[in-house]
Length: 109
Image (cartoon, rainbow, N blue to C red):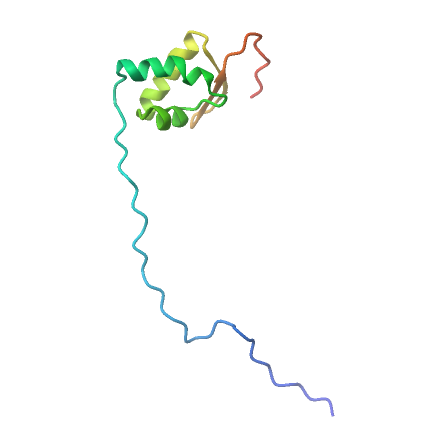
């Protein structure tokens, strides 16, 4: 009559006897050798190339010009003071700039 069926074993299910996981070596990052001071070539790049980027952040400038982030921030502050870039988002963690257009748009924060 009506009895319960014995529970079926699931196929491919994780059993108790699984292989032990080996420890991974972990990823090794290359040492960044970023400049601490602007040299003439990098300073020219800051004025020529950076102002053409659509999205400008200290991290983008740091990565592309191979300078420290603190130096990138200082450079961007200088560009903003001269009106070559404009600040879109001013957050404690990350500053976001864009190139200055002829007709300044309304800044949305």
